[in-house]
Structures are given as C-alpha cells and as structure tokens.
Picture 1 (cartoon, one colour):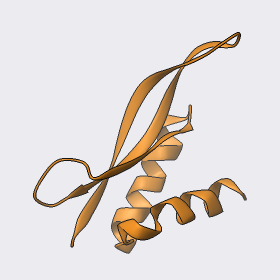
Picture 2 (cartoon, one colour):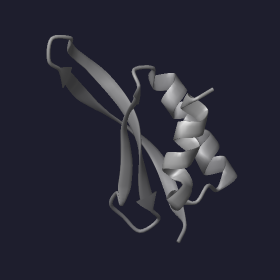
Picture 3 (spheres, one colour):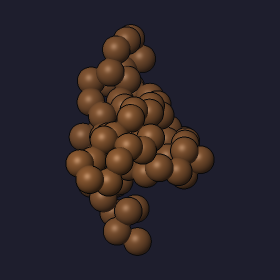
Amino acid sequence: MAVRYCVFSEKISLQGLGEHTGWGIEVRPDDGSPVGRIRDISENRPYVELLAEMLNSEGAEAVHLRDIVEDILGR
C-alpha cells in the first residue's frame, strides 16, 4: 500500500511544565484518512517537516516508521 507521511501539530500539556506545541508525523494511505501517527517528535516544525519529506522521498514503508524515527532521534 502506498502511503504519504504528513506533519501535524497538537498542544501538549505536561503537569508542572506547562504547555507546548508538539509536531508529529501521521501515515496516510493514498486513499484517505490517517492509519497511524507518532506524536510530539519535536517542538521544531522544520525538523519534523524535513523528516516527513525524507520518508516520502525514500518511499519508507509504514511498518518501519517508529523504528526510523527512533533511530533518527537517537543520533
């Protein structure tokens, strides 16, 4: 199944630490609504957009999304 990786944002509230905007990536099949997502990857929108662009340009399979993101964040 062909998928597209899209960036989304949401307000994250952490008790005692306040609120921030977290950027994540969701997986969308060519035919519709999201089938998976990783929340709050970073507060840095351009960073998450670059990651989504890389996933799309390389044709990454959705099953590997979590591992890819964990590998990149671990660097």
